[in-house]
Every structure is written in structure tokens, then in C-alpha cells.
Image (cartoon, rainbow over all chains, first blue to last red; front, side, top):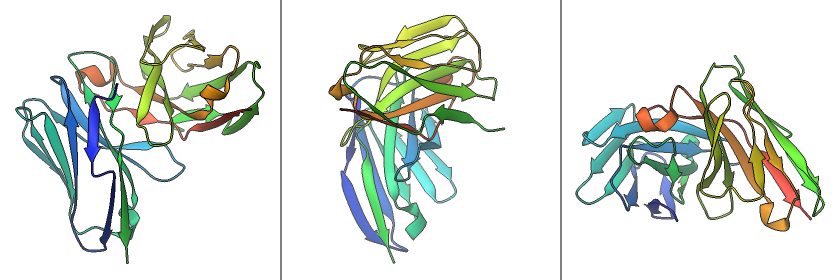
Length: 111
Length: 116
């Protein structure tokens, strides 16, 4: 079963707007990671947040983690057409060598 | 430094045929894994390895075999292909024990497999 579930499944915004994607998970985690996938390509790691962290930034990306609600959000500020892609959250439970992916959010950024 | 290389990129198989998807990495990563991605779903882990000679099952291992004779290579074998194995397959690698200790994963570009 999927550990992470992203919301919304699809998001369409205009260039310059902010995009927010949410991820909920079911069990306690060690860390949570966000990945990006361009159409027809492999996944690219964006950012990792550990269970004892609440917020991390990387460029135009901001990730928050609320372990009490078992949820995370990814904010992309000042979006660009090149941000069009699918975004996946993935969780690690304990020290397991397994990354469990959610179903993804498809982001479309239009000019 | 080529990263994670998967071959072939595209393959069509007939039901019952066997084949091997190749995966190689040149980053001296201990951890390697195989995922499959189906429409509307995230990636699901098939098998993984934390080092040469060590493999373990993931979420959906049935119908697939792996081996890890070297650090660089982690081939995925389909024993008797079925239409349900039509999917996009991704190989990935990471330092040491992989994501469990906070390491990020590097993905290959994917192999599109169709079983007819």
C-alpha cells in the first residue's frame, strides 16, 4: 500500500504564482524526501527533511513537516514554465533501506 | 561520470519470454534498487541491495530476480514475462545503506517494457 498520498493530484497555475503540494503518510518516518519527474525521465531528488526538522529551504523550494499530523508540504515560489513536472514525496521508516513513494502531483505551469 | 545507466530504453516482449534489464552505476554506491512505475501510481520497490552479494525483496518482487555480483551492476531478470509486467522500470543507487540513513537516491532514465 502507498505510504504517501499527494494532494492535489493535479495542479495548474500561471507563471509567477506559487504552487503548494501536500503529502500525507501513515506511519512514523525517519525522513521524507521530495522528488521531481519530468515527462519520460527519471526522478530527480529535490530536498530531504528529517523527522526532527520542521522546515527546510532550497532555492525557491520550501518544505515543511508536521509529524503530529503525518503530513508534509512542498511550496514552489515564483513558479516557471520549466517547473512543469510531476512531484513525488517519499518516506523512509526507521532505518529501513526502502523509500516508499506517493502517487504524485502533476504540476502544469503556463505562461 | 555517467551516473546510473539503464539498458535497454525500450523493449517489447511476448508473454512467457525472459529478459534482463541492465543497470550500472559508476559512483561506487553500495545501495542499488529497482522500482516499477505504473500509470497513476507512484514508484513501487521490486528488489534492492545494500552491497555486493546482498539482495532483498521490496514491495512487489514476484516474477523478478536480481543478483549483485559487483558493486557496479544490478541486473533485473524477468523470468517469464506477463502482461501485468508492462511498466516503466527505474534503477536507482545511493551511498551506503541508502535512504534509511538520510541518503538521497539517484535514478536512471527508465526502461519502458511492454509485454504482449
